[in-house]
Amino acid sequence: MNILIAAALCCLPLLAQAEEKLPRDVVQFIDHAQMCEHFAGEWDDNDKARQREITQAIEQSCGQAQRQWKRLRVKYAKQAAIEKVIDDNANDAVRSFRK
Image 1 (cartoon, helix red, strand yellow):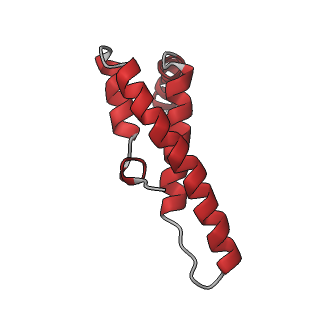
Image 2 (tube, helix red, strand yellow):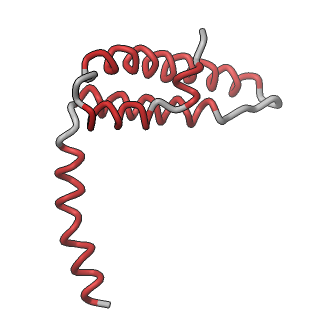
């Protein structure tokens, strides 16, 4: 059991380094894309005020993520590893967003 804990603790710095290697604009895109997907999955027919908040959050996060996605695909087109991260995080909510 102690060996497993030690192995897990040894891997934490590697995970942190992997995250640090992503450019800041890609990390921001990932954050916006996750928020977009989160809010796109919410719906509340019973509470009109809450639904307005959700719609506003969708427009903000999905709109931002979609603009970033289009820009980042061009910017990192020749960097396969980063391009894969971008494509993996461009969820359906980001890809299909229409204002």
